[in-house]
Length: 277
Image 1 (cartoon, helix red, strand yellow):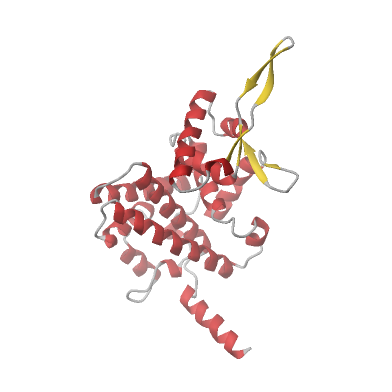
Image 2 (cartoon, rainbow, N blue to C red; image 1 turned 90 degrees about the vertical axis):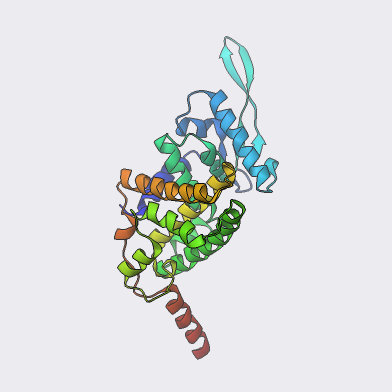
């Protein structure tokens, strides 16, 4: 099972509790999400929501746009009712909740993967994305990894990182079972200084996008202010993602096929075709 199929299988779990309002806007109820994430007590899940709301505010996003109070009256006995706290959540809110939930719960790790990838697909609809060719998906995911790395570098710099080659290699080592960027390039048969991300299929790019986004969240959440700690965090995130893929029968990143043409080669072909038409 490759990474795309793994995410699609996970998707069913979260999509079946999704609701659509009269305006076609999707949302999730916090109480329903709590059950899917295997939280038994609302007190503990509410604490996770509070952390997610703080993350939302810290990112400069308006909290009320993503966490809408939706309290209900529920039956508690013979003709007796009480108010029950709940929220209507956007996909982004679900993503933040998954980021702040207990990582020891297997379903939480899957939720983090799913909502991280899906949140970044919001620029195009799911239907549109699925209709793309593999090369088009590569262009799309490569653009996201490029933006993600730009944002990660800024956060890493604030965390005290100076040697960015070592920092990025820490993440690759975790995800690729000890391989550095140069090791990956050699295995793929790339030329000197050729970008390894330009020579990945959409599955492999998605795994790396998750590594990038999770590391940035980790550095911010833990307020990392030390280069060694930042490198360690990047390595551990890569390793954790690798373990999730392995536990769910996914294909290890190093075993995914390398495309015949790099992104740069495809871009040159597109430019040439435009000139000829």
